[in-house]
Amino acid sequence: MKMFFVLVPFVVLLSCKQQSKNEKESNKIIQTAASELEPIQIKMDGELPAKESVPILFDEMDYQQATQCYLWAFPLVSFASEMETQEKVFGATSNDLVLYNTYEDKLGILTANATTPYILSFFNLAKTGPMVIEMPPGAIAGGLTDCWQREIIAIGEAGPDKGNGGKFIFYPPGSVADKLPGYFNVTCPTMNIWFGLRALDPDPKKDEALVNAVKLYPYSQRNNSPQTKVISPGGKKYLMAPPQGLEYWKRLYDILQNEPVEERDRLFIAWLDNLGIKIGKPFNPSESQKKILTAAADRGHLMAIANSFKKRFENARHWSDREWDYPMVISDPSQRAQNYDEFFQRTSYFYEAVGYSKAMISKTPNFGQAYLATYADKDGNWLDGAKSYHLRMPANPPAANFWSVTIYDAATRCLIDNPQKNADLSSRKDLLKNNDGSVDLYFGPTAPAGKEKNWVQTIPGKHWFTYVRFYGPTKAYFDKSWKMDDIEEMK
Image (cartoon, rainbow, N blue to C red; front, top):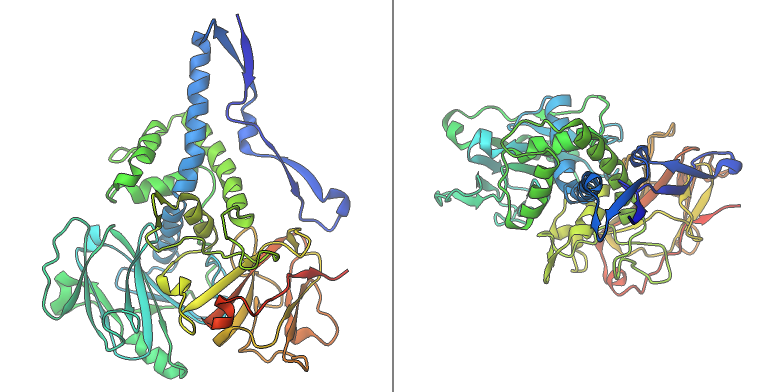
């Protein structure tokens, strides 16, 4: 009788750099939850697995499928986590808007910008029926995505109303839009919908008036519509990142229950069904399935980090000899490329962020935004909160409007929560400039003497990464004639 060894699930010891002041502990071996499952001998009966080995092989099949389901589901679970925060932490209904304005307001949002406010709402068409959004005329822009974070439509300045205001009506998937006169009629691909907007007037009072003029209500209540409230987080602590462990799968189960299954996802739904996560039936995985799901979520999370922080996609770098990546490696908001769906690309971006639109991947000079990200210093080492770093922003940054450099906690992917209460440096701030127009920026536990205006405080024991945003990216960004160095450790 032949035998060989497999790991069920695979037991990998991940070598990583520990976030610690103590350099002796910088290289630490950690074991994921999957390592609770010991290597097991697979016995063979001639050329076939022995009878007692068959369940072991099924366990390994389930584990491997579960890790890929974890990556597949990330945009959906991330969406569900943000929606749950608005509903359960802030008490927002489908008629309300939540305004994230201050640094403290935004601390729990994945890779939020620290410069401009966010105004967000969620609604579930299975509960509300067709929903109406009334947009006022003025400098206001927004858009809607489905629960897979695919853009449905832009509204406001970039939408069909062209900033002149108007009524939009959104129908559930599978329904036939009535093409009501006086409305922009939209049939949505999913039941759960995300709505975000920004007021763009330079006068804060006009911005406030514009936001307060936006109305959301079910079409069935159009003759007596409830008031749309603008809610502030009010200092409440929250984290919109997807949960870990078994809770990840519970959140996935919950949102799948009233969403249509698309043709592209049928195989993944079959895998989930095999793992005890079934549409139309209670969430009740067996103890064995729970163990596999927990281990797969743990390993899948590490896979997601590697897939995002060390991108291996073709042309992911803006400059071939720099560490600056495009965080948005999805080629189109539909998440579809020629001949395939962008499975790994969408997981990479939505591990870090929420929300996606055509304006965020604009190729038109002086329009939309452009983003660059780095997770490592000039030498390719993870950015360490215990160390001090320098970045020079060369003169004439390629931004028609403004630029910003924002620091995020690597573990949460949220704005760094430091004692300084500041996470970004931007051209809108009073920064010290060099005679040639360049700006030296500093990151570390303590500020260089006299450079406090140009410094963001990092936290020993925690890694970090950064996004550079160019609002209204110019031709010099697209043709790469303007070039920025890597972040460099100050030794």
